[in-house]
Length: 194
Image 1 (tube, rainbow, N blue to C red):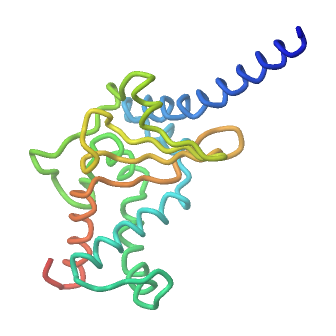
Image 2: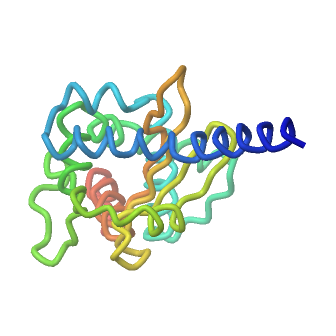
Image 3: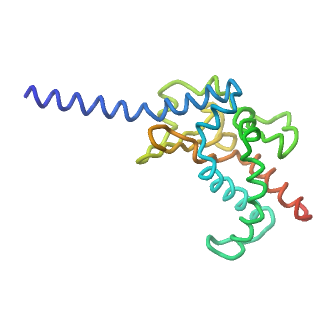
């Protein structure tokens, strides 16, 4: 009986540690973003992995705004992704990404943010229970919507993945307003009405 209790206690402690570990990665990223420390932010980001979901979001929004039906794997999707890649490359510079994470708006790419835009508050991520309720776990993956206090269309969805022994940002779903503005910027670069 005693061995069973010890085994269960160890398993519970391991589960609690595993559940809390991604939050430590989020808070490390939050501290780097708050301080504006580009080098520390860079250490917490997997840039190649982050580019793929950003490109996909811009392409999907671009297709919606341009009225182009895009199926995954189609030639049109491949061409649209190729056109979006230079814009994504501008987003993923060290400075632009740090600014996007800190202010929620890529000023270097889109210019000044609108006055009514909700800036993510890394100081007020929410309490432990709110964060846990807003998170999704996978094997080696962790997703979290922030800021907790905002409705989904105004939230960012962070995806962290286990790389070695640290959690790194590998996905970032942007609020709809930012996606729309980036897609319009892409349309403008192509000389199309947005």
